[in-house]
Amino acid sequence: MAGALGTSGPAVAAAVPITHRAPTGGYEEVTIRSAMGAVKVQIQWARRGGDAALYLLDGLRARDDVNGWNLETDAARQFAGDNVTLVMPVGGESSFYTDWIAPSNLNGQRTTYKWESFLTHELPDYLATRGVSRTNNAVIGLSMGGSAALSLAAHHRDQFKAAGSLSGYLNLSAPGMREAIRVAMLSGGGFNADAMWGPPWGTGWLRNDPFMFAPQLAGLPIYVSAASGLPGQHDNPQGVGGHVNNASAMALEALSLAQTRAFQIRLNTLGLPAQFDFPATGTHSWGYWQDELAKARPMILDALGAH
Image (cartoon, rainbow, N blue to C red):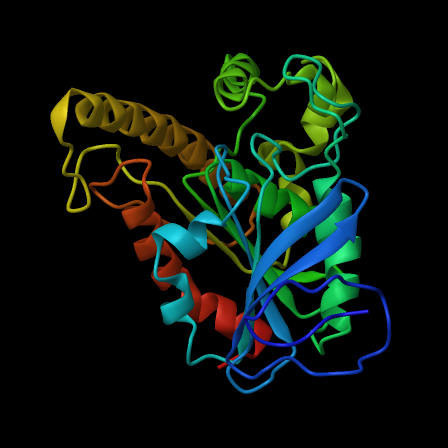
């Protein structure tokens, strides 16, 4: 049974009929039972109690205490006056928000990631007890969360009415990409990519590759962006460490740009419309994702009828 409303403490979810509505425009943190154990979710409720929701997905180095959108951006302020609930799940480092086939054996992971199941079953089950629709949702993510957002929307069209990828990796079958992801997951928590979708030739990689499942996005409003990788207004590196991190952010964004351009060509070939944005400057960092979320906002609100 859900606990008290407001910010006083977490609530443990159970799939029950609506017994209380969310506080209109309020903020709350809840803990929801799942196959992975307890999952924390940070929620900003719709301004006027509407039933629409926007899921905001984190990047590869997602923290286990706070969702990056809540910590690093003004996402809550951007949507504060809108009739849409922001849903910000916490955790999922290197998970790609998918259902894994086994725990990672390289870092002693004890439970198997089941993020797709959580985001499409257990979490909407809970939100339904608070008056949020199971079918009037959008999902947008950055980097790892960008490709995951498109995958969730493609495979769960009954749940999501719009999707967005910001600096995502959208052509996982491109030469070298599976190896690059393997290296990134090792550096991001010591995760073994084989535990996620199996070996590189496994079908799980194809199922979660936006380039491959692109036809399943037909008719779905989509916002996709990637910047050039050149430093811009949000880059001000300090010291040696700051410059090293900035160089990494430049390289990651340049790779995302190449992937996103390939995805754009893929959609054009299929005759599928989407809204693309390619800023002249910008690295793989939060300031630019905040800007892109603001640009995607009108599309999201239109798709959900949440103005």
